[in-house]
Image (tube, rainbow, N blue to C red; front, side, top):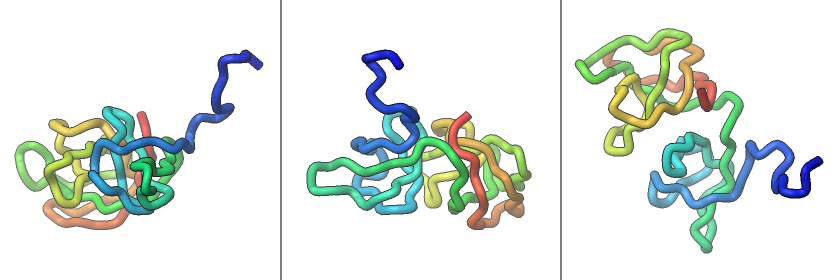
Length: 117
């Protein structure tokens, strides 16, 4: 193995999230443009353990840039910092992953989301 490899897998790291300001375990988070899910609450030093791959159950809203829009399995999911919930089909956000289940147009549901892209 190369001597400069810091983490063998590199899919669970301790980093400072850029959004939300104070993540808690289970939150979708961003580290710049890197999508992840918080594994721990934010620590006193400002870091949070995050998972950057895999599948998580997350709250997703059935909207896109034009308004209400159903989510289907395989749809791209984006992270929009100003929205609640933060995940939807709004392409103005940061690309987060893929929906693995459906959400009705205009509804919010907790579904499985494949992290990354």
